[in-house]
Amino acid sequence: KEKISFEKGKKEGLATWFFENGQIEREAKYKNDQFDGEIKAFFADGSSHFIQYFKEGIPIQKHIEYFDAKVFITAKASG
Image 1 (cartoon, rainbow, N blue to C red):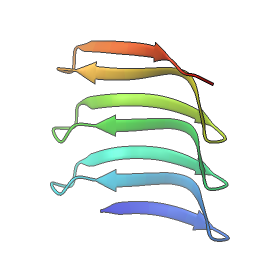
Image 2: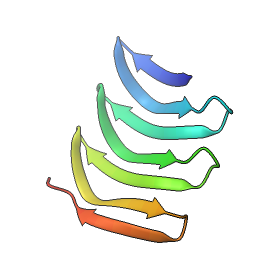
Image 3: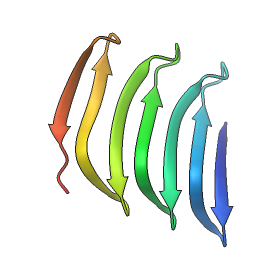
Image 4: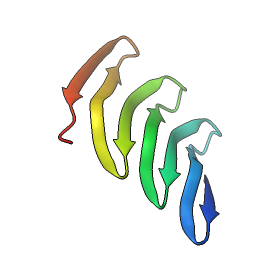
């Protein structure tokens, strides 16, 4: 299931995707039909999976991915 806002036929604002159990799977912000801002993903138990930042559809800053809810890996974005 997903909840996405549209403005003038384009994705705009917060979008949320859900697991079948009702927990949030992913949250992303859109601006003018492109990712813009923080994207957060979660495991089915609600713990963090990853965080990625975008500006006008291009990855920026660091990608952070979590394993076992304790250890994380960061990688520099290409943009």
